Length: 471
Image (cartoon, rainbow, N blue to C red; front, side):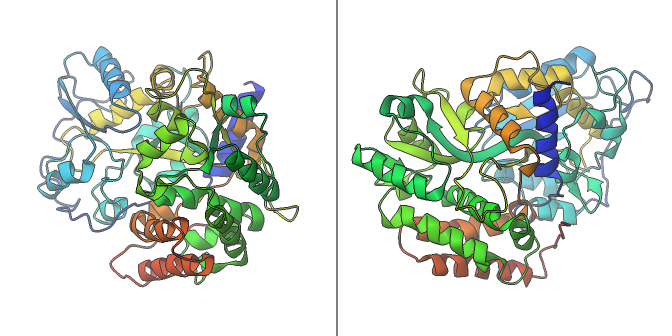
């Protein structure tokens, strides 16, 4: 194991050593107790067929057609079919997972594999509470498809299992390893003689310099303003330590109004007050804001490491997009500048009522093979959760900076999971608060009040299953 892999594993342990769970609310299903035709296709288990796949059983795979596209999934399906040539695979892709599949969960006829992602994903909180997901524990114990002497679990980056577990059961395979930070073009910075700032005061000074050059320092997805909550919360965690995130995740009273959150909100408000944001940003969606950034209309944008893949069709040659951590507020920060947020993401699941549960688990085993993981990295320029997936793979510029950032972050990486536990809190309530705040309509204290009221509404809602994250 080389130094980079050791560092990445350490980073993953620090970033992912927390359980994660649900995402929206109120996904009505017919429940998981009445099995119906669930698991109708079952073969005989053997050393060559550890999950008991029925060789001629059809497999239905539904993929979220987002930033990663669907070609990577078609490649995984082809790999599955190589090992199970009698199996007919039905593939489909959609940007509306909930609208497309929720009726099928209700009537008990879900597909075998679902990439439950995107803005229209089905709420995991509802799926888990209604026993609608198959337990993936058997997958973990199965031998790796192409790493001799190791189980599937042995090949995963630390924390992958925890981030997909609910009350001790592994129910969701989060396939990608996502790093979140502030992105800039090294070409633009080199051409202009600018250096990425490591402290907040230096960042503000740089923003003034950028604005004077006729370029907006910032843009953001105004129609999805929660993207700007990510660097703000990161700033607070680096100042106050991981306990800031723990309090938010556990819906503790006034967690959003901690001293660290207040200081971070005050700092980010300066971006708004000094008009460092590209005009019209509140009306842009994520692709429009990212495209404006790629066109050099703005210097900074907040995003996850899917950005490079999502923008590949419009990124100018030599743009050299680079991810960097949020600047430090000062010497009193509990985490160093290099600390960066990352987590396992892009959730996949096998419904409990799928006809081919064994085939769904085997499909995951294919995805988690060394071959499947490396092919994914080559196709979409993102890291999967399989150790060694980048070995021998020439990485695109942006992904190489992601790996470098993880190496530098080491064990100081951090994450939060309230957005997984309670999807409505981030996607609706915090999103709305960010929209008001970053468009200049509310003050820092009003912004935090709005976030806290949202958290309190979730905490008092008895219809929402609650999860507790340990320190």
